[in-house]
Length: 91
Figure 1 (spheres, rainbow, N blue to C red):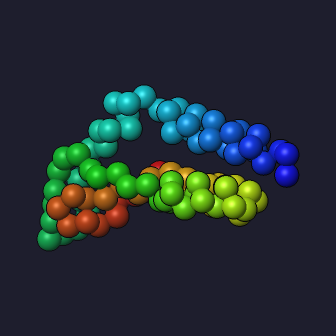
Figure 2: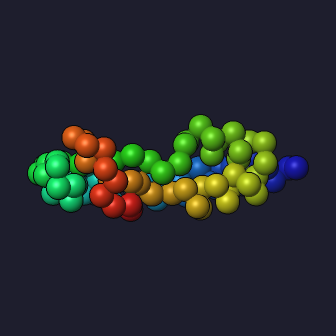
């Protein structure tokens, strides 16, 4: 139980490192052409996180192993069209 704060701290540092490994320009501007025939949007896409930071934090505080599993499986982003909300890709 004494290692719990250390494990949480290491997990938070890993999350911050993974979130910042790309340049801000690369994270913010994802240009797409929507594949939906009825939409055809051209421009910057919306990026949504695949997992919830709140759920990850709660799982890390209460149950370390499920929290780490949650973070590993739900890291990354979904790229969606802002006009029709179609998922174009996942990162």
